[in-house]
Length: 475
Image (cartoon, rainbow, N blue to C red; front, side, top):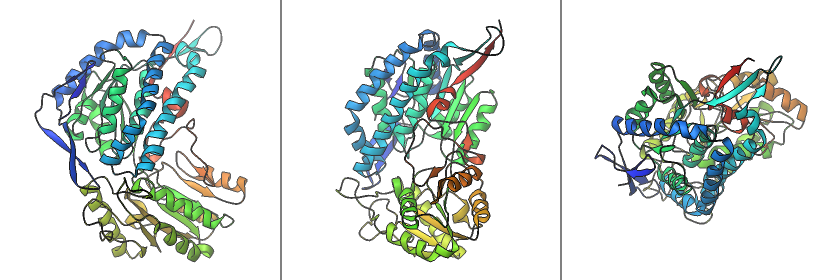
């Protein structure tokens, strides 16, 4: 069983209970982590609190020098980390290399670039108003982070790098389902020489370790990524000590295809987006909103595209989609597919049965539903699996209404042959990020949710400022 990381060293948990880590492709136990408890959180917070004065007093350039060394080590070890992620979440190895490790490396590098350019303004102060008055950004203190299993390295990088750069110290509860990337990053930070207590790791479950972090009176901020239900609980627990809470929660993102769009490109891109990471992406474009006059063609193209994502062993060459992460997640996705059929949606491809030849492992068929009504559960609730719902519309206003007819607002897409028209529709979507015509990822943009998709922003400069208190100095 692995250990906790407290005050600059690996240490045993106060709890003797272990949590098995399961390979979702084989259902075999591949690792085990401690089921930490509240006393472990107390030790981690005490270490972080003790380290805070010296760490926050360092010039931001010195803090970033530690992080730059960590980035170098992370790049050197990226291959092994990708294999670990392919093992414990079931991501295809090529995807694990390109996205599960490659994208966190890009975000890490981008944060350091932004601080190199804007650090003086961010952390030294900027003039405001008349005279020599200043706006100053300062660290909160101890930041507690609770991160999910779907992008296990990426979600930690989005929190730890800007928080540490801003002068905060850090207590991490990584996912217990797929923890191997978190341990690899912790080893990198240790080997980069990060001072003792600046970064701490306590493994365990959300109801025990996560709640202990959120409730702790000496934790000054909590950053959480996960389900809406768990995010609401974090907010409730944290409210007793009036600390800042940042939440990145679920999504039911719309893919709005306008009549003048390149239909084949839009539909294929939308299907690929949902099949990415076996549908386990909070920003997946799971609702494809199509003009009625092109609906039949869109259904046909979507079905053909989805059938190219046959589930397979993550380490097999050419496999584009692996299993979902756990038996519970497999059962959840299959249950939603059955719900869709019962609600009257038309099952075009896929279904709730195990994929052919995949009786072992947590595999789910890539599934496309047509004739979906916006009131159906499969159109309103986050499935977190490889399931696409096609919804027809008449007129642009109805397309926008359908797109916004959900409690979520994390991401979205618009496709049109007219760039100005696409931008106009994008502005009408009540969501934190919108891609136009399949645009690539821009790591300097903010990412976060409207409505029940969350509070706060990650990525880019807003993702750094999220971990800063703001002080006004009048002089």
